[in-house]
Amino acid sequence: MPNPSVAPPPGGCAVAAPHRPLLERLVLDIVRNGAWVANSSDDFHRGFGLTPFGSITLLGRLSVVRQCAGESASSPICGIGEVAGIAPLTGCYRGRCERAGVSLEDTYMALQGRTDPLDRHRVEYQSDYFGGRVVYDTNPFITYRVDLTAPGGPRVTADVGQTVSFMPQGGGRVDLSHGGQLLVTKSGTHIDRISVDLTLAGISGGGPAVRVGVELNSEGFATGAVSTSRGRIATITGGDRTLSPGPVYTWEGECAAGAP
Image (cartoon, rainbow, N blue to C red; front, side):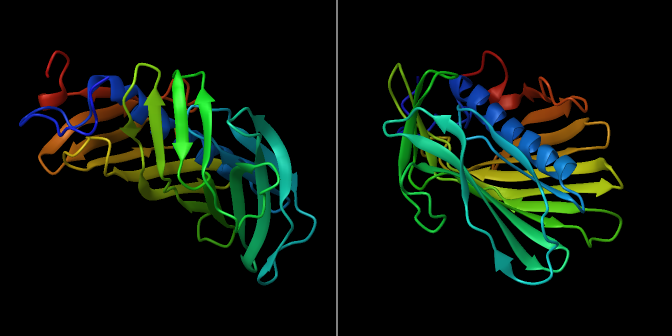
């Protein structure tokens, strides 16, 4: 594993080859969870979803007891998926109302005994999927805004920023911290657009920030790119409604197969 504390060589790829599957999976999980929330939310139900990196996915769908009429919040529900960490971890959900027709779906992972959504804290666990240790400086947390009053159909948005690092078993550290936005729109009961725009400032290990922009249409077909300030380094295409295995990344230029 390249030492991420050293900047890539001039002209070298900002996303080292061993790190590319990590980036691709990170983006795919955000897309899948956004699609789940949108498909699971209507006048009578709300969906929620979160995939802590390299871990199990925390998914759920609840019936709406009372429609949003104004600002309010429910008590958290925890025990939604258990994650074996350095200390016991649990998945939690809290529903809130912003105003009539607009709900906020908080989904997060927390240490057992520290499940108050305002109690942000460090968590870490082993990832069997990628083989290594994952550390979140503050526990993974996402809030989906579900707007059932949006013209044309329901609209789901979220700030998908997390501060997270991955330490592979072979040594080193990969900074997967990211910030960005998710947008999902529906026409009636069908998703017609999923859009993700992310910036990973540290994955290059001292090199330029990496931006991922991808949009999926109603058939789940993706178009997008991975880029830095030096230009595009990958195209994102393909896929279908199943989102399995997901869009294809074609790394190019300084990141083409065989490039340093």
